[in-house]
Image (cartoon, rainbow, N blue to C red; front, side):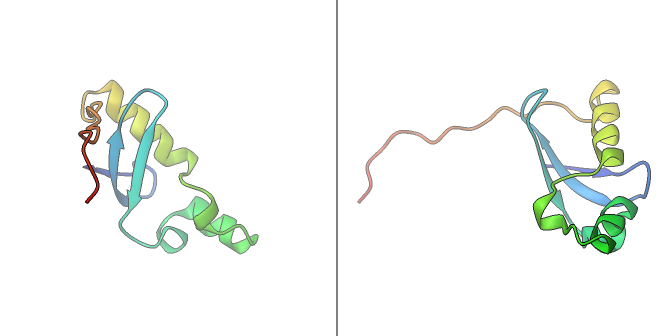
Length: 84
């Protein structure tokens, strides 16, 4: 995973870009405390465990891909084998 800072609020996350439509994001800090969009949702009763990203972070990821700061990662698939 690659480290990326949201260009809107500065929240630092880890991102893995598998394809144009598949992005995995790992939050390193409490999203409801750090991110204004998540904080607003929490105040309305929508908690971050049900939402994976915010619009500003999605824009940051798209921009990082366009600028070449974030590239697609090859997926590693498990090697077929036996369970013991």
